[in-house]
Image (tube, rainbow, N blue to C red):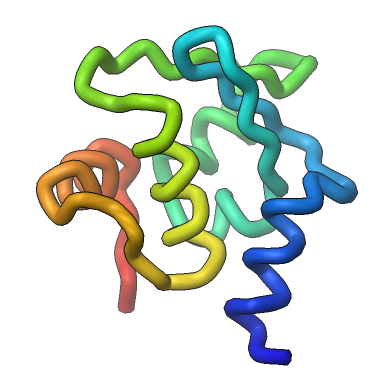
Length: 100
């Protein structure tokens, strides 16, 4: 099994997740160690001095749907893109994702 497949299964299983995002009253669960290594903005949200102790983060950008953010998380975990290019660019810029 590839690393991308393993990471995708990890995201889908929610096993050992320690970060929750709320988008339109729906929850998405993720893992700090993936997010902080893919995005400086997510790192600041999760590890910074203003990070909530419960690690629940509300995403209130009207341009971002639950499905968009879920697909964005899949991209962060796997480098696979199942999202509209415009939305991916918006989220990648917003969260300072560098895919080098």
